[in-house]
Length: 184
Image (tube, rainbow, N blue to C red; front, side, top):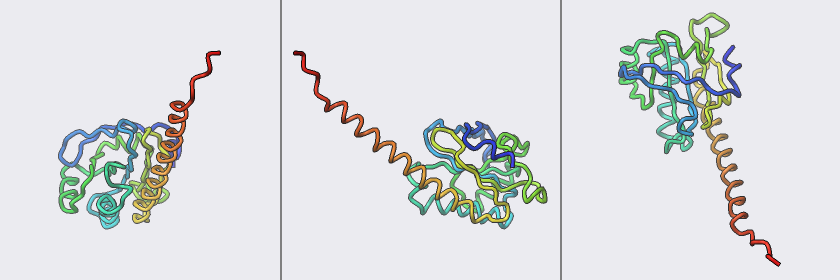
């Protein structure tokens, strides 16, 4: 679980091919939007399909995912060709990247799953709008926990942002309304 070392640190930037063979760069903090980055073992397998579709459905149905409030990115070691079939069959609406050379898994320190019993772990990272890894969930068998984990974190990040904006607004108004000192 070396990925835990990333919590509280700047998330790595990585460029991988998407399902259309085009390069896609994961740029944490670049647009100020939180990223839900989920690593999964195999496109088309039962659990991975369920997980990917839960994210697809969350993007369509849940407020915290709408209006560019978050970016969801899926990554697996499958080939671009396999990713393309998977994306088209499941009608996925977010970037699905091919990590055949395990570059992203290495950068994010995602190893084997289930105490080494599976080749690839199922790990989801939540990266805030400043590019900081805030938390991660490693649940190889519990594919259903990942979209719930991200939903809760996005709600928390949205509240943090609203609180920060509310604190800035009164401070700005206070400086505007402060009368000039008397020149006497």
